[in-house]
Image 1 (cartoon, rainbow, N blue to C red):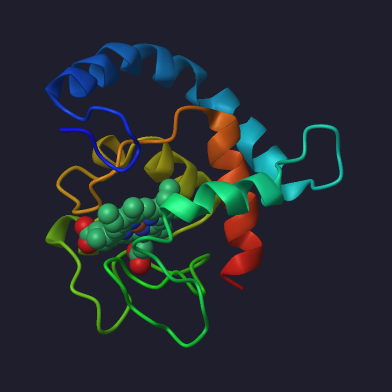
Image 2 (image 1 turned 90 degrees about the vertical axis):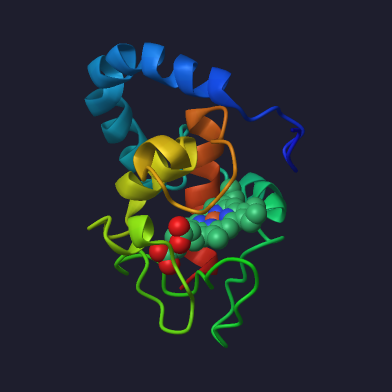
Amino acid sequence: MAGPYGKTAGPAINVEDHLAMSGAARFGAARRIALVALVLTPGTALAADAAAGKAAFAKCQVCHAVDAQGRQTLGPNLHGLFGRKAGNLAGFKYSDAMKNSGITWDAETLARFLRDPKLAIPGNRMAVPGEKSAADVANLIAYLVEATR
Ligand code: HEC
């Protein structure tokens, strides 16, 4: 089944994820540090690109609003996302997996979730494949930091 991302989502992707995990664990710490640096130091040569992130968010906007009015669409409104506990917005019916994830959203937890939603929170209902590159994730987060304030 081809999703809105034009990519086939299925069991084969899971297998790849698991095969890639040992590598991900090895590089995880370095990547986390790099990502946080990308997000927290705008204006440097490595700065994440919020404009590119805004463009990338077009595909998220099908399901998510970011406005302060708290408008809900297919997914929870993302206003005030940073520092918020996952699955905690009143009036949105989350999966138990999201509600019980114990996650608080910050650059690090978002990066992990957006890179691979299924792997980060098994059983959650956000049915999208992860972002292909760490740069795409960093750009999205740079945009979200501004847009969800
Ligand atoms: C097809 C609809 C859909 C798309 C597209 C989508 N999401 Fe979601 N998203 C959801 C749903 C539904 C949930 C709630 C999942 C649950 O309860 O398990 C969610 C949850 C979230 C959460 C957690 C919010 C909270 O209140 O804890 C974040 C953050 C998020 N999405 C970001 C994104 C971003 C960024 C994108 C684009 C890369 C995206 N989503 C694309 C439907 C979608």
